[in-house]
Amino acid sequence: MKKIATLCLFLLLAFMTKLQAQEIAILKYNGGGDWYANPTALPNLIAFCNKEIATKINSKPQTVEVGNIGIFQYPFLHMTGHGNVVFSNEEAENLKTYLLSGGFLHIDDNYGMEPYIRKEIAKLFPNKKLEELGANHPIFNQKFKFKDGLPKIHEHNGKRPQAFGITHNNRLILLFTLESDLGDGWEDPEVHNDGPKVREKALQMGANIIKYVFNN
Image 1 (cartoon, rainbow, N blue to C red):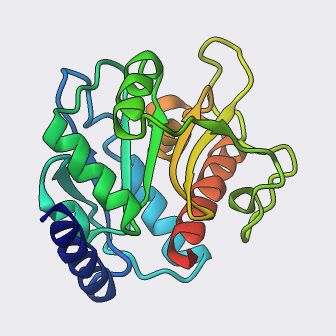
Image 2 (image 1 turned 180 degrees about the horizontal axis):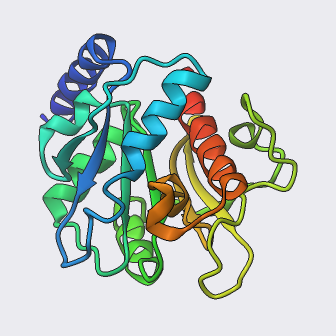
Image 3 (image 1 turned 180 degrees about the vertical axis):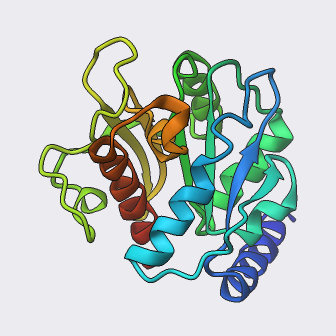
């Protein structure tokens, strides 16, 4: 029965992705963390992508809950926040099936999210470990080249930026960006007073992520 359900979900994903191949959404989660942080980030990234890498993404990103079958409409989900994250068993199963069936999740730590999200990722994939992506990974070498890997956008603890991933069948299905805060760099310039060069780096890296997802 479980295999049949998974197959049905896979077919549903394939059908919906074909219809809405360039739709992206913000992932709403429980636990008290501010999943709604950086409200101007994704709209700005979408506008940049539509201009620079010829995507045709809906200018208004949607919001979808972890446990909702609606996540299967979107090939790309973005998740951010500063605090606690909790996936129920049902939510974890839904998200895991989505990812293994062709979906992609980008988790951008907005400062303070790391200890919570690592536990939930382990719940999703108890037999897989987050692995750091080297600068030679394709995600850093799409239209824009990042020879040193993930760019540093905000200081936070002053540590080096790191990108971690979960891979399935040689495809990156989950990206966790840490000590970078790409989302802050995507926001309107007056929100964080980032200079043009910093914002450009953040937007270019975001465009690389989008391009990688849409091409894989």
